[in-house]
Amino acid sequence: MKKRNNKIIIKLAKKISNTNNFIISKYAYGKDYHYIIKEKLNALFSKIKEK
Image 1 (cartoon, rainbow, N blue to C red):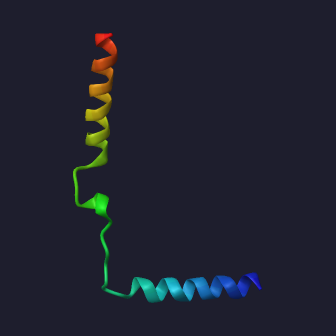
Image 2 (cartoon, rainbow, N blue to C red):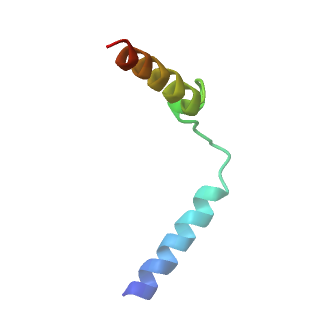
Image 3 (cartoon, rainbow, N blue to C red):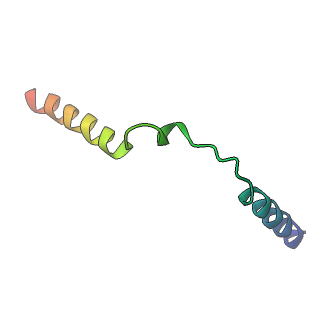
């Protein structure tokens, strides 16, 4: 049964990878999250230092 499932998954993956209907996730449209997190952490650290 496991071999059969693997074959099905591979066939589906090949079918999906051959399509040209790409969908881009919401996060890919905005600013890189590394920069966002860095800015937010710096703001948090500044608040902590004030106290």
